Image (cartoon, rainbow, N blue to C red):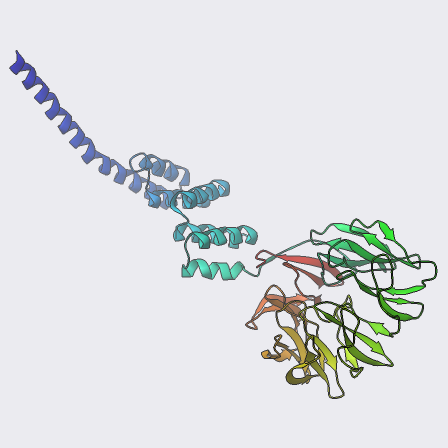
Length: 432
């Protein structure tokens, strides 16, 4: 009896082995048949059937990346773009951004002008695996793409301290870096936010005052103070013209210095500049003279800053030169004109009839070749060619086409540009 049971068990085992062996033999055969069916459907452009065949094939080999890529491509050919994107994103998560899938999805985004999505995809791919020549090639392609805020103003000044002045029908307002209006265009003049982003200088109805970051009036001059000009606050002090002369005040209109100058700049990075009897001198934070009154001019930006990078441009009898916070000349070159630095990146200088770029050490980094130019920021600088304004990178390559009527420097990825007669703001998809 026991022997019969043993024979029976052995027979069942042999039968099981034969069935399993048969299934193992049939599995790759059926899998291959499904792949061939899918390929045939693709050749006939019956993509729905092709997808069905490939999905059934995955039942045999669930981890087949090759089959999943075929499904993604068929979704795209079918016009089911949502399923195509989901399929690619699923593979990126499952396999750690394989190059073939990244390139497939990136090319789709680029061809459909979805540059922001392409940037995010490629940045994620580069974080997961460094290198990849084809991935880098596509990243460079979209690196300098941008989106438009679709604003429309008569003028937009350069950004500073997370804000910018906007102009509409001759009236001035203030906008933040998110495109939100802080102060409506109802003023005769306005400055940008202070260095600590808390205070705004305003001129309305013939009267100067300071407003808070929400645009509400918080401080007004004293009765004996006739304010003719009011500057941007930086480190608790601002230049102001009161009762005919310039000096420095705090946000409560308390006078911090003598009022003896004809002009004065914002003081930053330890120094600024003042003018007396038609000549300029550098001064320190305690309003002490760093140099004598020996300069014919000092370059400032739109808001009265001259020393954002710890460098300033002063005019001697021979031409403009760069100086440091001690009043020492930096470099030996003379320039016909210069643009104040806005960061530690290079700025524009004019030599002869053309504009080029120098760094903070006075080294020429891009030869003079442009009709006009602005300072570098975010690795880009606005330049004017014979066609119009565009942006170059620090290798001197035009990376944003010269199609604008005018353009200003970037600030945290934002730049005011003029299209036709209207100013708007563009935002880089890659801000680093």
